[in-house]
Length: 604
Image (tube, rainbow, N blue to C red):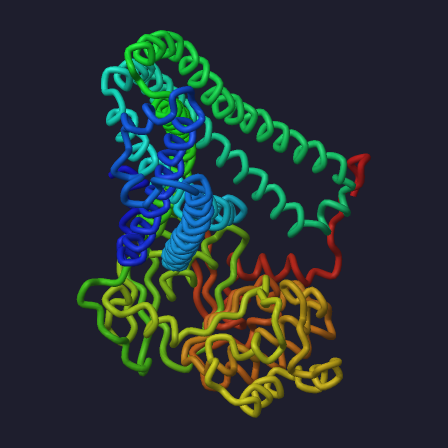
């Protein structure tokens, strides 16, 4: 379906308001035409033999209806001109406001639909679509649609109404003369259609270039530390300058196409005006009144104005179609993680989590398996640690539990229920996650801890903060729990951010806990406090721990060693050390008294 037709589906709920706007635009167009018609009695009176001109007036019925006969007719005409102009402006104002309201509401609905669709997407979707480009579609593309619905559509309707009224006037005065003046029609249509096609293609490239700029800007701002640490300011300036220049070049092509339309149509119009003028002179000599001729010329020139504007609006609609295409592409993007049609609520976790013959590959890389035939049972209350070298599949495995991704083969069940058969909220509400890369919002401490639990009281938030050993620090902040902590919590240290994340997990009070490298990036003192907070959090949870620091997993009930997507060793710390397998090698590499160092001369 044409993307602009899909936009109109969002407009339909506002049909009554659109009908009102259309009615007001018709009244405005009628008054606009009436102003032109009032020129006839003025020029007929001024012409030689004015009385004769009046008696053969083409619009005598209008003059009789408005009582524009007899003495002081000029004064009455002037009064009507002022009245018509006032109400024309009033009706046009009300119509444009109604259309603007509709446009704002339509775009708001589109943005909400688009944002909701983005929230439904899997992590794989976001790995394939950069943040900046997604932001450009949600903000820039929808803004262009708002301009189209609010302004361009209003003007489009108004110009069509004026076109009909002035078309009626010129055909009423002399249909032969009117047909002669429309010789330019086929040429205008040909130019409009061809330039419109080019405009749509170029506009699509323009929006893509704008998305690239948005993406580069978002990356640079988010990665300022890296940019400065590696002295890459000049490189980023050059990269951004090239993207901007690319956008300028594309936009100039848009401007050339748009600017070319009106001059071409005007030139063709003036060429077509020559035979019209000769024929009009012939008609005047045969009794055509001066007033009628003036009205005809005025109406004809007013007629060319809608034609010229409509041809340019066609280009604007093509630009909007390009934006709508990008918006609906995201709205229509298939959701990889979907609930089953008969999905049920997952009962509270009671017994065990089971992975049976689980294999997994990331979307788009199905030929590269990340997990291979994994079988695992995790009993309630158990602490299970996953260790192994980078790329062994540890994080991928725990990402399957809350269905951030779906298994490629095999099943994951909780208390015997396949997690693909339950609702996502009921599944994820029973899983708390604390990761190494803690994400905090640019909001207050209280709101960050209570994220997902907006109904909780301040005392509950404080109890969670105390369990995470962060309460005393929060009380020292300028506004305590109402202190805004900055984007991603940049005003806090790593350990403080981590403990706020732990407090968030404590408040969630989920029976299943996932700790993904939760202490690996901390100094010794911060790690000690975080470990104490984690101990409080883990007391009543079934916990899956991923850690590179093997000292943090020695208290686990079971340690699972992963290698190339498989579980190759299993047991407690002491047993695995005795086995002299991969776990012992990893442990010795971390805690060896002497670490071999290779210098640049090749000696040890």
